[in-house]
Image (cartoon, rainbow, N blue to C red; front, side, top):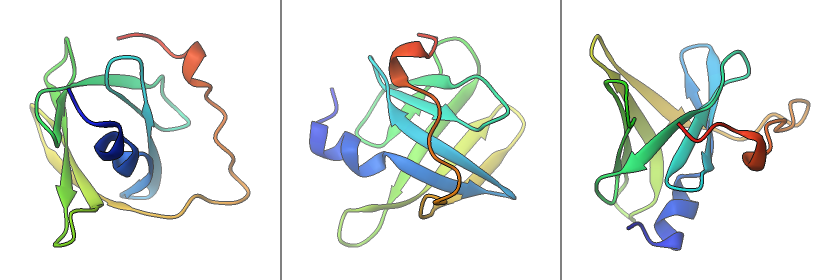
Length: 104
C-alpha cells in the first residue's frame, strides 16, 4: 500500500502536450483524467508506479532530489509520454467528484 503522504504528493494537475490531466485519489489507487474522457483508475504496484487493471497502461511518478513529485510518465503499449506538474487553472475548477467516477 501507498502511504497517505506519498499519495497526497501525487495529486493535482499535470501538463501533457496541450492538455492538462488531473490525478485524484481513488478508492483503490489513483484516478487519471482529462475533461474529454472518463477517468481511468490505476492501482499501485510500488511507491511510484501504478497500472491500469485491464488495459496495458501505467503511470509512474518522477520524484526530484527532495523526494517531491514534479512529473509523471504515462505509458501505453504504443508510447511513453511525460507530463509536468502544473498549477490548477483558476477558471477551470475540478468538476469530477470522486464518488461519481467509475471503479475501473
